[in-house]
Length: 308
Ligand code: NCD
Image (tube, rainbow, N blue to C red):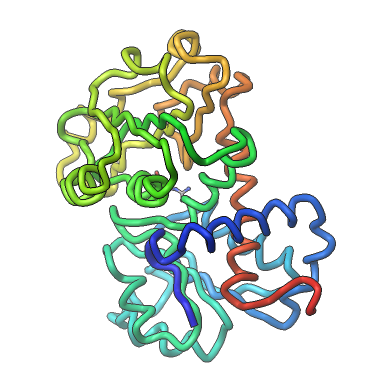
């Protein structure tokens, strides 16, 4: 049994297989509509979520399976002091696979150590969010036609943004990828990524403070929200939250083929006037997330369409 805790738990070839499967699901969803009949997905969400939890649930329902779970720590026995280790031991008897989101970095890894069913990390604190990365990669692959030879701008909260951390880890494995890291000084990427991933793998990258200076050179602009819930001090959040606001004026500086991605939820960082720009693909990205999670569930449960 395999878990998905970090984006690196999937090799490039496993990743390719999942993305190809997701594309086949998009082409012919009917072929997969009963593949998970009798299977259950548990969603253990100790932190707020709209897209991740509901797209996991939609994915399992689209596959003919069922879902159960909780959507806040308050409504689970965590409120009584139960540990993740105990909870997952119990859930292992109720479901076939589970997705867990937790505010503490490493909680899904702990769960995987005690679990009898495959565990998927649906976001752990400011650390990783590997299934958002799958959605990001599927979006780039389908709409850009490739995952290699791309200049990717990552903008916003690069310190606490787990989607950014997972995306960097996944993308450095493709040839010709370079990064432009756009953030305020206080929200630069963590050292373990700058030194341990980018520099160690000799990936070209530079760190800048403004969007305007780099927009013309980007193939992908990945916008992110300043992660309010990870700040110790509200004043810092208020000071930093509106550092970057992408609007039509800034979009005019970008190339005609640049794509704007955002894991969502957006707060202020993309003005709503950008939504109608054909380069803004974040709502498509949210939709692709369902197909890629369907592909992930099938892969982790070892189910093939023609066998069912
Ligand atoms: C992201 C997350 O939870 O990290 N949301 C998501 O899963 N699509 C991004 C965010 O909350 O800013």
